[in-house]
Length: 141
Image (cartoon, rainbow, N blue to C red; front, side, top):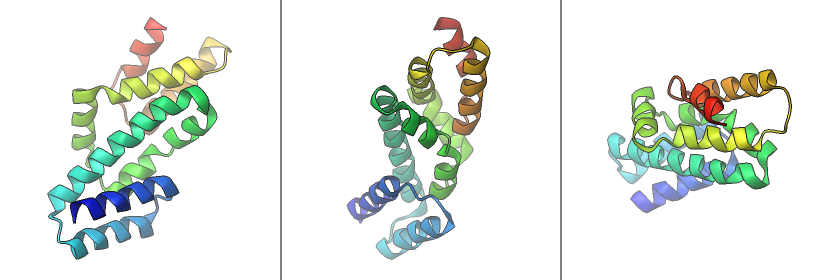
C-alpha cells in the first residue's frame, strides 16, 4: 500500500498538476489503500522534500523551468495537504529551503542587485521559507 501511494505521489509530481481534483484523488487513494492519514502526510512530506531536491539540481541546467516550478510550490503544498508546521520543521531540520533558494540565486542572470533581491524575496514567499533565509543568502553571495 505504501509503495502504491508513493508511486501515485511520484506521478503527481511528474504531471505537475496540483489542483483540487488531484488532492481528492490522493485522499481517495489513501483511503482505498487503508493508509492512516499521518502516514499519508509523512509520505507526502517526503515527496515534497524529494521535489525540492530535484529543483535544487534543476537550477543548473534548466533554471527558468526550475524557477517556474518553485513559484508553484504553494500549490503543491496545498495539494499534498502539508501543514505549515510540518513544512517548517522540514526546512529547519534539512535547510532544504536555503539550498533551493541558494541554487536559484546562483542561477540568476547578472542584473541589478534590486532585481535579484526582488526575485529572491518573491521565491522565498512562494516557498514559505524560514524568515531571513534570502537575506542570509544575499549577504554571502
